Length: 168
Image 1 (tube, rainbow, N blue to C red):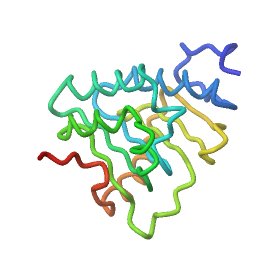
Image 2 (cartoon, helix red, strand yellow; image 1 turned 90 degrees about the vertical axis):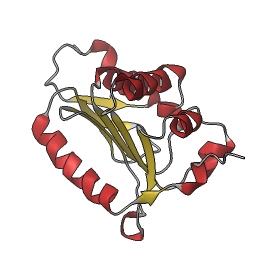
Image 3 (tube, helix red, strand yellow; image 1 turned 120 degrees about the horizontal axis):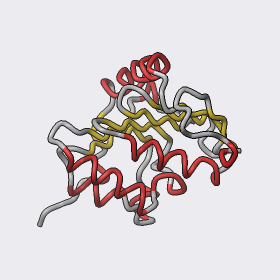
Image 4 (cartoon, rainbow, N blue to C red; image 1 turned 60 degrees about the vertical axis):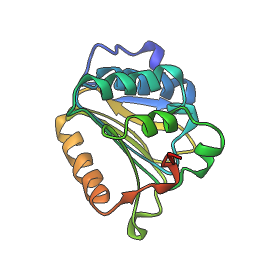
C-alpha cells in the first residue's frame, strides 16, 4: 500500500497493512526526529525496532543534543533481553537520553503500538500483533492528543529495572 503513496505529502493520512509496509514507515519517522521519540507498546517489538537502521537513528538522535529524549513505555522487556534486542544495550549505554519504563497497574493492558515524533508525526497500530494502522508525517493536533495520553501513562510509570546494566 505504501509503495504507491506520495510520502512527500506530509499531511496525508497513510494507512498500512502488514510488517512490510510498517517497517519503512517507522524508519522514516525515526529519521525525521529532531528532539524526541516516544514509543508505547506491549514489548519492544523486534520486527519494527530491532533493525540496525532504526537503532542507528535512535543513537544519532540521542547523541545529537543533551536535550534529545527517547521515551519508551513497555509492559515487558524480559523477552527482549533474552533475545538480545539491539535497543537494550543502546539504552543501557545512553541512560541520560533513552528511558524505558513500565506502566503502572492501571495501564498494564497495553495492546497497541504508538510512536510519536517530536510534536508533529505519529504512527498508530491498534493491535500490536497485526501491523495495521495509520501514520501521518505532519498532524500536530493528533500528536498533541496522543502525547497527552502518553504523558499521563509516563507520569505514572516506573523505570524498568530488568534492563539495568550491573557494573561489577
